[in-house]
Amino acid sequence: MSPGPAPRATSALLYLDGVSKSFDGFRAINGLSFIVEPGELHAVIGPNGAGKTTMMDIVTGKTKPDEGTVLWDGRVDLAQIDEAGSARLGIGRKFQKPTVFETHSVEDNLLLALNADRGVFATLFATLSAAQATRIDDLLALVRLEDRRHTLAGGLSHGQKQWLEIGMLLAQDPKLLLVDEPAAGMTDDETMRTAQLLRDIAGDHAVVVVEHDMAFVQALDCCVTVLHQGTVLADGSLAHVSAVPAVIDVYLGR
Ligand SMILES: Nc1ncnc2c1ncn2[C@@H]1O[C@H](COP(=O)(O)OP(=O)(O)OP(=O)(O)O)[C@@H](O)[C@H]1O
Image (cartoon, rainbow, N blue to C red; front, side):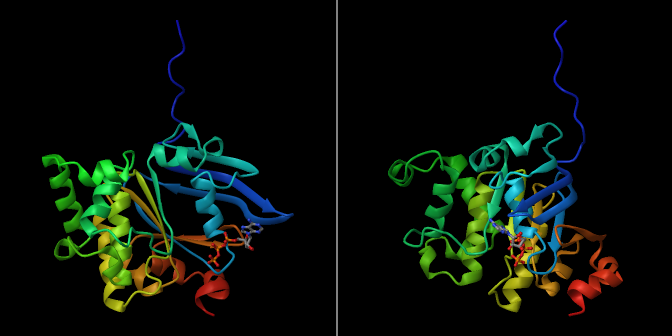
């Protein structure tokens, strides 16, 4: 009898355990454990240099861990996968700075993202299928840009560009969306709308958000992991971690 598929080690979508990574002898990530369930919204906070970006780099295959387990969907070893491979698995990453096609309309940006595997010319000059039109309508509604459909992306506000890029990532239907400091540079109103947007997205997609803005993290109303020196200092609700003396010492109390 031929052996069946390897049993799933965990039901988690993303499972990090005992992960370490050093740069020139400095341990940026140090025995880190971190779990994300399917559809979960999860915030990661911590002081500068805590290892938040390095953790995301490890998850997306940009950086290889020195040791530890990094499992996707209970069975794929992410340490063996590069960035293109992680995108194919369903891991989307939103960097802090918005990257949209400024000279194209909002609608065309979404269309290009939907057809990422086709050329720009073929995409923009093909007739929109009914399924694509519906998908674009849904994405525009989700990212609150229905009334900006025909606006050039370069003419959007900073916050609107961030929402458009989130919509472009969603066009690829990722299982996990990693979002780096989305609220940076946003107005208070945009910040609160972004928190609501990420809450709307969660459920259908797992979302991990790195952020320093505590009003934003509070509005996310989700599990918070505090990183410090490459390891987990505390996790739980924001109210819980905010009361942990070590968290106050190294981060919140400063
Ligand atoms: N490629 C690299 N080479 C050398 N050191 C690095 C490299 N990448 C990260 N580091 C170091 O690892 C530590 C963790 O950095 P990282 O960028 O992951 O922290 P962070 O929590 O994202 O910080 P911030 O909030 O400032 O973005 C820092 O001390 C940083 O200088």
